Amino acid sequence: MQFPLVHISWALADNAARPDCDAFLEEVFGAQRASEILVTPETAAMGLDREESLMMVGDTMLIPIAPAGRGAENGNPLGDMLRRSAVPMRWIGLALKTADLAAADAWFAARGFKRHYDPGMEAHYFLVPRGQAMGMRLEIVAQDMPGDPRRDPNWTPAWWRDAHPLGIEGLQAVGVGAPSLAQARTLFADTLEWPEIPARTRPDAQVAAFAMGDTVLEAVEGEEGSAAADHARDIQGICHLVFKVRDAARAATHLRSKGLPLIGDTEDRFAIHPEEAHGRLIWFTGLTPPGYPAVGSKLGRFRKA
Image (cartoon, rainbow, N blue to C red; front, side):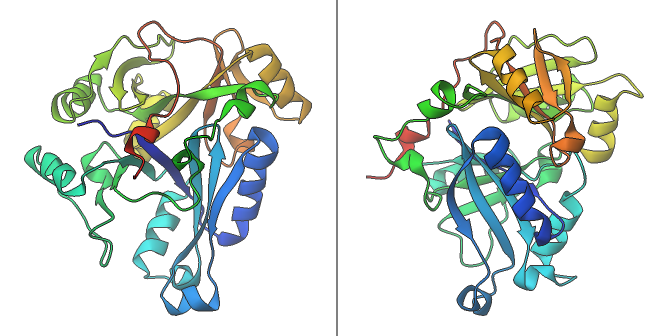
């Protein structure tokens, strides 16, 4: 089955930090707010336990989520999960789209995955907990995200490519820390049936790449003692994102003009230092590795009639 990417989520431990995170995405990436979920007297009465902004960066939706309302209380399941997940370099996971939730449930069940349904949301999504997907939580969703502009057949992400200084063309890859590439191939290629494609080369790690719906999943294995190995052992799950940009030198100049320190090489790929990016590693590159597909969301084919 094909599962286009819906969104990528990360956690903040304290809701007071969320406005700064949202502002970072807006000011640096030109993010546009598709929707916002807030605790109000009405939603508090319904038990809302989080606040989040649905932020579009090109045709990729990023969602920083913080505990709020009941979630601010210790012992609240979602609030506790967000606080655990808010350590630097840890993301929550990916949401993937399905046109048929029951068929997707059967597909994952046949491959040995346990699925979790939140009460009252059985018709909308299910979760594959992070312990079953190399530390990455998968959310399989049938519903549209509120305010999602990708539902509009006339919407285009071209502004980020043509007008914004970063020149983002699209999300090229999502990286995941792997204890070994053998384990990654068993999970992603054999079990999830994401075809393996030629991977980008890295001097500091081994990489295996898999075609995951409409983007690439990069499994990263590092040598003992390396940052990649430490991530796979201690943090787990998503370790980075990679955005394809139109002009790498121009993108780097834009970031430096904002006083943001960069790591990496603009001739290959570079990133804002994670300490200045709310603890997340987000790479930019002007190159497309051989075998990688063209960037661009394919969520529109799952648009509801």
